[in-house]
Length: 69
Image (cartoon, rainbow, N blue to C red; front, top):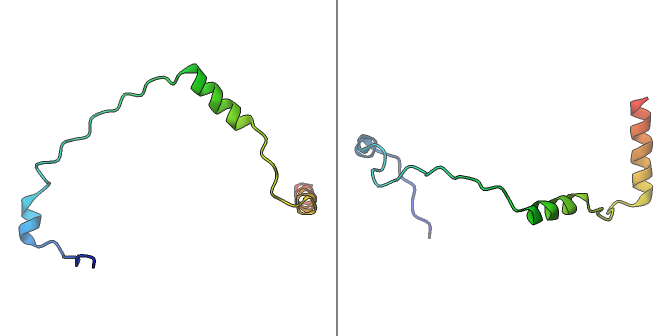
């Protein structure tokens, strides 16, 4: 059973932010290795097989050509 939700009362509002929370540290990003960047590039360039029936793809192309002209 889930706990019941409660509205914050005046006592909770007066307490302010939780003093035990620590501000987030800045994350310093490192340059990715060349192999990683090459793998991402190859993945993006890979041709994915079409899941659309050829007749539908042709109809979409005709419609796009008609709208564009």
